[in-house]
Image 1: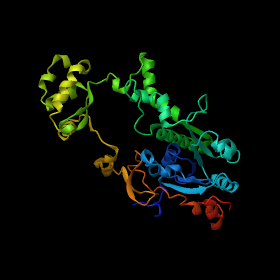
Image 2: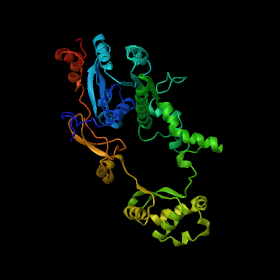
Image 3: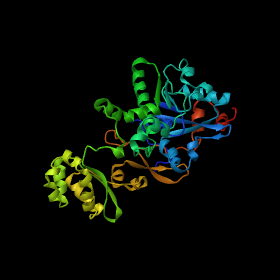
Image 4: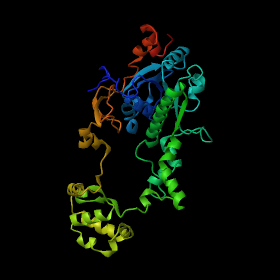
Length: 404
């Protein structure tokens, strides 16, 4: 178990070891960026607000669908509490930024400017600094608007494509927040590489709306190529005949895909459907697409006699694509994820132990591990502030949001 109270394992072999990131972030987008840099070895210091009625990143206390935000996106980070609205708190922040390679933020436009901690205010004093801003919109006519993941899904075509016609539906996770943070991290990586050549830092900007447009760009280009608007996914004419969720024995559901003529032959042989394989109306995939109106009800009836486990076994043996319909919490026990090390032990901020999901990549065959569990509020304040030259007493006072 990697607990935040245990010393972290050596990170010196990781790509961004020796890079210090200071993040002024909350919710999902900014913390996602810091998570990716932290997992890759950067020392990420999360500056959390205290004083003036605030007590840390608000996601620490979210309920319901937000209750997983803090523990997922804030591992491998250190927590420092400061009141940036006091001169002493801001001075401490500037001392910290002086030691940083990267600063990241994802507050509303103007917030960092009011604090004097925006890129324009910092770049002259810190010419090597890389400053990553995560926003709702890149600079332009929409930049004054307040954005949320759901807002940009609606205005960016994703909700239209996900829901049924006339019933726009947001995706079932924070796709733009997480991917927007990923592009912020990618921008930071690119800027670090460029700094090696030029010696100069720069500002990186990533935005929810533009991220969403990139996600939907394949449908925009479909229109450019064909002249025909893309239909919502539930109403689309599929390129493949059998590419659907089937309800099988005991009400279980399973997704099955039979996308080539060879796969159609294998499928028919495996489930005793010789009469369909020999039907000239079903000779090619395109023929089967045209026949879906009568073919699919027939196949649904035939497949309903089999258990999901039997169908899965046959499809796996034949190399045909299939998928059980899995709920998110079931994945904590997924045999593949557990066997490959994609899930790792972590300690939640309340002290309970759990598993968490690592980044979906390996370097030299290894996942990027949990070195620090999500920090308790202000857990590393004394360590960080005393390293900046404050006495322990000054550090304690600053971390409580008071004048040092």
